[in-house]
Image (tube, rainbow, N blue to C red; front, side, top):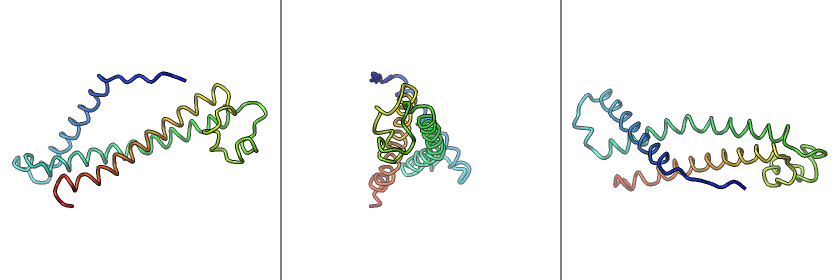
Length: 145
């Protein structure tokens, strides 16, 4: 198993870049609609800008993660099985997705593809949770609940 290292400097840098991106989106959106600076000082406008930036990131990330999962799942099924293991057989309980659960049925290439598939699914679930909690927390912060 690989060790997981968290690069805090990179994580903080990407978080700050996302906040700068959401600020630029908010400023551009407010100026294109109203043309006034006074709306930029409202909390509701900034929360809407962050939500808009999340939406843009979501519309890019979800297809990329799904294509990544599909590609590595295909590589796992095509080249990652051990010799003598069929795609649909009793070892994987007649379900190809069970190759994700039974790494003993995979060779080294298959285990590498399995790891990348699991990373893609995990990132996709985290993205869905962020979007879900964003829609749950934003009305509470704005006092609309």
